[in-house]
Image (cartoon, rainbow, N blue to C red):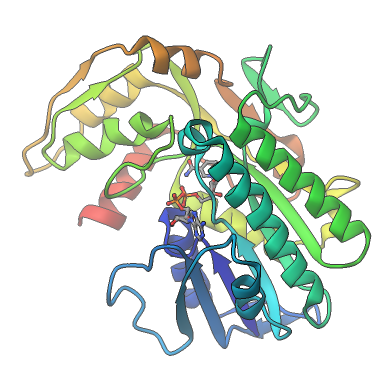
Length: 325
Ligand SMILES: NC(=O)c1ccc[n+]([C@@H]2O[C@H](COP(=O)([O-])OP(=O)(O)OC[C@H]3O[C@@H](n4cnc5c(N)ncnc54)[C@H](O)[C@@H]3O)[C@@H](O)[C@H]2O)c1
């Protein structure tokens, strides 16, 4: 079966690709498990040279706003799509037009290409907690109203609605997951406003000093890359009827205060020289973070068998094992 990951050159896309390759099979058109014979990584930026030395992998570099190109990548033979390509939160807020072109028009290109494919391709879409805003409760639950307060959040919610509607019409078999902040993001930070939550772990463990722009008491809902990748695969394999009327599902992120994250990093036993963590509050970032939910709890995701993380020590240990050791 042929699988396409848009955003396949990005942080989650690359980790998801590795997981799918290691697993070797996914639910295919028959509903049963089928071998993944072709995995296309489509992105504006290619993965690092040599990262995917596998005959099943094809790298296509290009722009998701180019409908013809997207239709040639997600062609008639495509069975499954993981749609992750996006301009992330602060990027979409800084450039309104770019955000709508990539996150809305690009998503429509993907959905139209999937609609034109033979059969009913499965599609998993990466949505976000940016779907929530306004008077957001400390703990976001399954029934919390959708009230996006950023362009990025609005684009993600529109994507969810499109997926539910295209699925209702039988054009594709779509599903969307609202991801908490994924920590630890390796490598260079991206334009996500939440980047410091990874930086506070990643930079010190790489010997770099880190100035956290929010107070030690500031809490965020997070999930590890390992767990989110498991969630993507689990969502793909699920019988979508179990999701109910909406094809969008909240994922559970556990709550961590930045002070607790800093303490956990300081306590890591390592031979490597560690960078220092300081708190240097940036009022603009603090205001953004204060408006975010502190934790998310989805009983529905738990009942459907989605995994979740529970503590920062495990998240740090996984980062060290996967990225540093
Ligand atoms: N990482 C998180 O904490 C988090 C949280 C919530 C939702 N998400 C969502 O998950 C998805 C993956 O996130 P990520 O953290 O891997 O981000 P990322 O920035 O590493 O990956 C996104 C990829 O999209 C690609 N892209 C951007 N514009 C494009 C275009 N015009 N054409 C083709 N490709 C383009 C980028 O090159 C990038 O590789 C995104 O949709 C993001 O909104 C991520």
